[in-house]
Image (cartoon, rainbow, N blue to C red; front, top):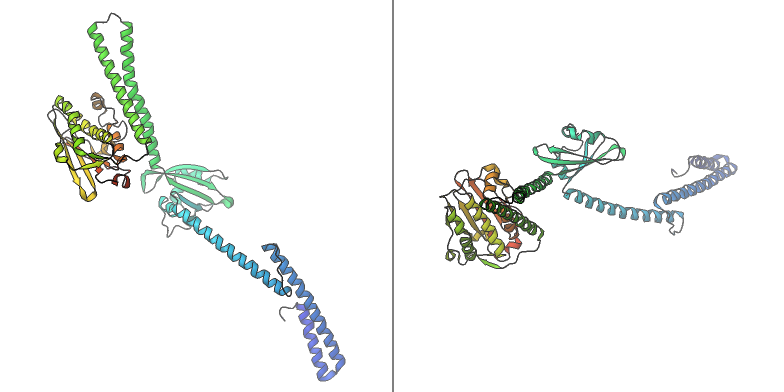
Length: 454
């Protein structure tokens, strides 16, 4: 009865009352009127129900798409269509849920922070990286207004500007101001803000290193070129210059040319090492051979400077091998020994020693000196290009400022690393650590090095 139209229900009820009254007391004429009313109510209900059924099917097709399925009657057809659309809807919901889960996994694993804020800067959604970089507790972050960040002068316009343009700004990381964050903000429809946060500390450091490299390389080349130009102009303008002075000028010019040649050679070596991505050859290199070459190449320089050079004889290194390119490894170790000799005063000592580390499948080659030592704050930057602790003394000794950088790159390519310890006034120890097992160099190739103060 509740499914019938209200008017049909009233007529139907009245007809039944008249039929009952006619049967009980008033006879068949009144009952006939009741039957007519019941028949009218039934027709009314049929027509009304058919209209509602057609309207429901039309609404369903308009909403879910046109589909006509067979059935014994309109109700069966409607039931079939409902089942079809529900099945299609459930499949669509499963697909959307799967895509949503993939997007959530993608956002969670992004190396940058992504956050959604409302128009007033309240955090709505964010991935783990965003919570970390924004210094917000994930448990209480939702709905929290980023008051601290909104007060940053560089970020004021980022959050308050209108329009859909992408805006960018930088600010220090609040828990550690030495780190820098980059913010990219886009205002979406409805006033919500899409915020992308990433740390650019390393990018800024590398940019500073590139700028310093260009400036230092220009300066290193400019100095000898200026000297050469001055002496050349003097020789050209004064043909009657005494022969002794002429020879002195030519000697200085030759030294400057050699300095520039060494600088260019070192720059080309660094460029080649950085561009070469191929694995180093897994060729056994006996350490005895390397140590013997070190002794031959540096004995005369050590004697000229009055330095006691101590290198283990080949017999002590017998059986100890590393793997890679012998010439490159020889150059890396040679740079360490050469530096130790140059920065050790006359009467000092430079000692090379071996330390097999079988448990770690590596061997350490220590180069220790009794030289001037290195202040602690210089240690982390020693392998930067052109970085010098004492710029005047380095140029006086003829160094290019690239020796340690070349040594570090060579060791890294061989799966090794460079370590250093130092005490001011007592000397320094540089250690080349290399794998001593075949295949280890490519399997554990390191991308970092340690420089520490002992």
